[in-house]
Image (cartoon, rainbow, N blue to C red):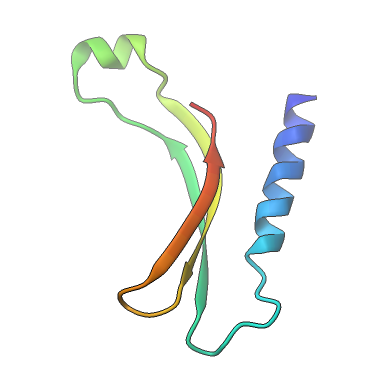
Length: 73
């Protein structure tokens, strides 16, 4: 069930990345998060190193963008 929900969420995020009526200046990117690396020794042993997730970034200009997504910590 967890895999199914993850795949449904990923499909919804990917669908949001498809511009419906975007101007030529707007670009979209898919952000994929796989893992985190904690530099402190205690953190490597007690914190989660595997953080899977997906996100979307829309860049409107070199100075303006918006990002959204989801990851499991």
